[in-house]
Image (tube, rainbow, N blue to C red; front, side, top):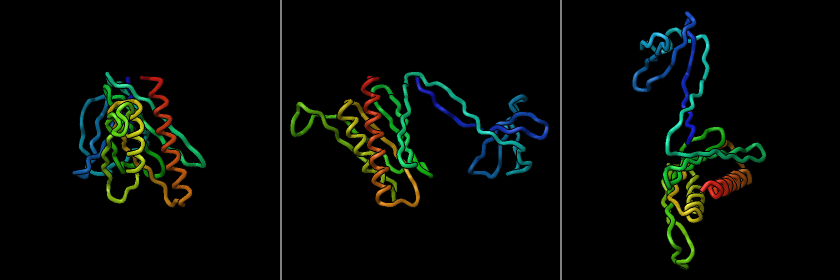
Length: 191
């Protein structure tokens, strides 16, 4: 089973009643749902700001999926990963830094090695957003895990710190590859 976390913004209005808050990007309006009354009210943007804002985490379970989280850090740099087993396939999300995002996606499929059919290798494809450098990391991690665990693997990564020296960049690359090794180690004990 996987624990998925969704976020809701909760505030109390002037009368003390709890409300759920969500913002629509296509219209500058805030929709507030009064949880006790079950009514939806439409407010102009920021009309009557809430007097208290709290972020709540709602945990739900999705059947048929398992997941685990891993992280590693060194010298103030922390990289995290979430691994989801989707049937026989793996979805791995890697993030870290001051601006986590989606920078690159790597997909790998296991196959017998072209040099030695008794050994396993992987074929991979990458998609990278303009200006992002995570493509090498997602390719290496996806290929390594796919060839050793022999499942389809998708790795999504977005890691960003500003500014970085070349030495710090190498350290973060090393942390990401160590994270891939941690994931591989955990998968071997689970599968």
